[in-house]
Length: 117
Image (cartoon, rainbow, N blue to C red; front, side):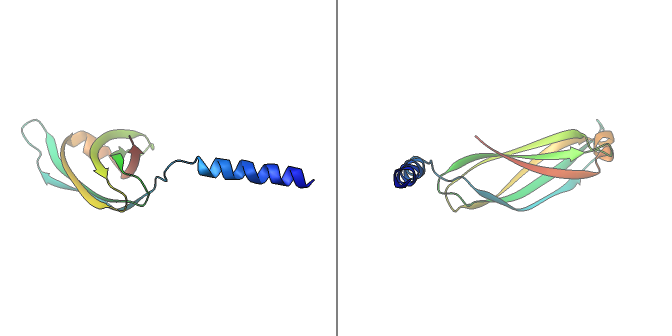
């Protein structure tokens, strides 16, 4: 019986020793604002701003997606913001996007997604 516990303890130690660096993040704030429009093509200029913190122990390249969701709960528009974060770093990322007025009018809420690359 003691050999079983010793074997399990050794396996747990080996697994822990081989674990990679921790990746973690916090989305601290996110917002969007209509800057201008509609223009001659019927598009709105929309500004997106998100603040993200790398809580992990390794640097990461992050892709933040602001996804416009309609009344049927389907995504109908995506805006992409990219950045690289060092461990412990907090950064605010901003970008502009043109959204057709008709599409923007169908958006009932925004979801903010984060992917690591």
